[in-house]
Length: 603
Image 1 (cartoon, rainbow, N blue to C red):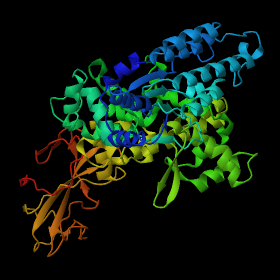
Image 2 (cartoon, helix red, strand yellow):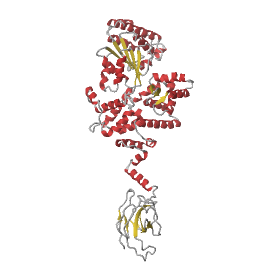
Image 3 (cartoon, one colour):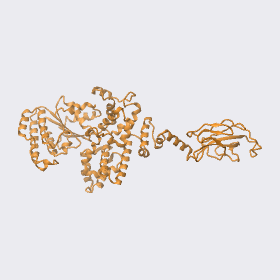
Image 4 (cartoon, rainbow, N blue to C red):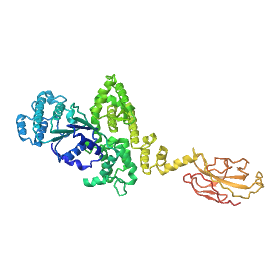
C-alpha cells in the first residue's frame, strides 16, 4: 500500500484524452463516498485512477492498493494487507493489538478441502477470521481524525476469488465512515445498495488522444514529461520526424482507427514502428492490423499483461454464454447491435432461455457487469457495443475449440475474412473482396494509400510489376490478342503502273497504306494494302470500302489486307525488302494512334 512504485511510474506516458472524465470524477467525489471506475480490460482504468491519486495526494492522505501481483489465496498475503493499511494510517497501537490477536496470519486451517483446493467458497474458519479482522479495521477508522482516500486497483482478482464476499463486506462498511472515501477500478461492477456509492464507465479514447499517444511513443520517447505535454498540444507531420512524416499520414490515420480507443494498442503500435531501425513501416503495420491485429499487438516477448490477447480472459469468464457470443459473431457485422437483436440471439443460442427477461438477466446483464458488452443511448434508443478486440478474441476461442474438423477450417477462413473486412472499414479504407483475398493485392493497395487515391482490385493488379502492367495493358488494348494495332500512311501518293493494275480507277488518287497487326501466334506482322480514295472513304483493291475510314478513329477495326513478305526474326526490327524501310520494334503495345510514314519510292 501507500505510494507504490507503480504510482510513481505512472507518468512514463503522458496522460491524455481524459480531461472531461477527470472533471466529472472530481465533482462526484464531493458528493459520494465510494466511486467505482469500470470499463473494458486495458482501457486505461489504472492510469485514470493514478491520475486522480496524483491530483489528491498533496492535500489528502491517499493510500494505494493494487491486487494485480498478490496471491489472493495465500493467507500470509491477505494478513499483510491489514498490517500495511494500519501502518499507512499511523494506527500504531491498533496495529500492535492486531498482530497479537491474529498471530496465525489467517492460515488457521490448511487441512480442509476448501483450503487445499481454493475456489469460490472460503474455508469457514478463515472466513470468520478475515471478517473479524475487517471489523477491527472499520472500528479503527472511526477513531482516525484525518480524511483518507483509499484507492483499490484490479479488484477483478478479488471479485473472482473466495474473498469476494469479504471484500464486498468491507466496501459496504467503508461507505458508512465519515473520514473514508474509496476509489475502485475494475472490469467487474460490484453492486452496493448504499446511496453514496457511484459507478462511472470509462469509455475508449477518441482518435485524437490515440494519435497523441502514438506520436509520443514514436517521436517523444526521450523527452521529459513537461516537454511531452508541450509537444502533444498539436501533433505535426514533418519530414524530419522518425515516423510522423507527411507521406505516412494516411497510414497513421488507419493505425489510429484500428487501435479502437485502446491506449495499450497505440503504445504497442508505436513500439513496433520504432524498433529495429524502422523495420516495420507504417504501411506494413496497417496490413498486420487488418489481417492479424490480436497477434500483431501481442508479441510473446512482452509481459502477458501488455499483450492485447489478454482480452481472451474476460471471454473465458463467461463460458456459460459462449454459444450466445458464437452465434452473435456469425451474424454480426460491425460492433454495435440493438438490444432486441441480442435478446433474439440469446434465446436461440441457449436452450435454457425461453423469454426476453431471462435472456436479459442471464446473458446480457452478465456480460454488461463484466464489461464485455457496454450499453449506449443514442437518439432516444439504446444499443449494445461489443468491442472489436473482444469480438476477435471470442472468434479465436471458437476456432481453437473446433479446429480439427474440415468444416471448422472453412468457418475459420470465413471468420478471418469477415474481420479483415470490418478492420478495413474501421481503418477508413475501401478495399473490395478481391484485394482482401490476395495478399499481394492487399499489400499493393496499402502501399497506394500514400497517393490518396481510391484503389480497386484491377488497379492494384495493374501495378504489381512492370511486366504485369505491360501484359494487362496489351490485353486491354488488343482484347483477346486478336485486335489490330494500326499505323496508317495517309496523304502519300505513289505512281502505280496502270497496265499492271487494270482494276485501279485512274481517276482516283492512289495511295499505299501500311499497317501493323498481331497474328493469332502473337507475332508482329507488317502488311500493306493498295487503296484508292473516294470522297469520304478508302477502298481496298477489290473496291470495297474499308470500315472506319470515313472518319479516322483511334482504334480502326481489323480488316483484310494483302500480305507483304518480310524478313527478320519475329519481335525485332522488320525490314521491308521491297522498299528498304525500317520499322522500330514495339516491346509493349502503345496506345492507339494514327500516323503516316515517309513516301515509298517506286521501284
